[in-house]
Image 1: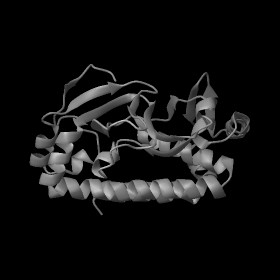
Image 2: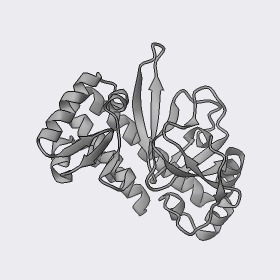
Image 3: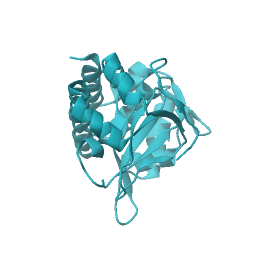
Length: 242
């Protein structure tokens, strides 16, 4: 884990969960927190290891929650952006987890020691409510994603993934390799190559040297399935306080 840190304060707070907290709760929670840089593919949580910290993701960073099978095959089961947090096992009082969480898009996160987080959870009803609601929204994302992976076309799933990543990054262009996208979707790279080629030929995306640009978001949304809208609505409902 990167060691360069700086104190966290209310100025420039872009995590949507932390922004929901009352000022007093927020200040108390981040008093011992650190804003840390997180590099590409850097792990925040790993299987069968104690969870020492929770991480509130800042705007522009995206974290993948990935399951790896015994044969080495991996598939993404969820993603986290600045609408959420990593380290839900602490909230669920799990000693270990079976997935790994790492940065698919680098950025910054607010890191809080697990013991402090648990103390504040016991102390603050507002924090418990925010995290509880996020746990529900994350569960919907995971369940909807599982159904999507089973029932919808590779093209629709790819469009959903790109839209969700764009929402978290907050810009049209972001780093992405076809190999990584294939791993996240649990499909063959050849399938990603075909779909990416179709989307690029249609003028919906542009892919050059490991960087993808969404050129026509409206048409990409039309290519995606209903799962994108369902997941986004749940996340917006959470952080809008409805």
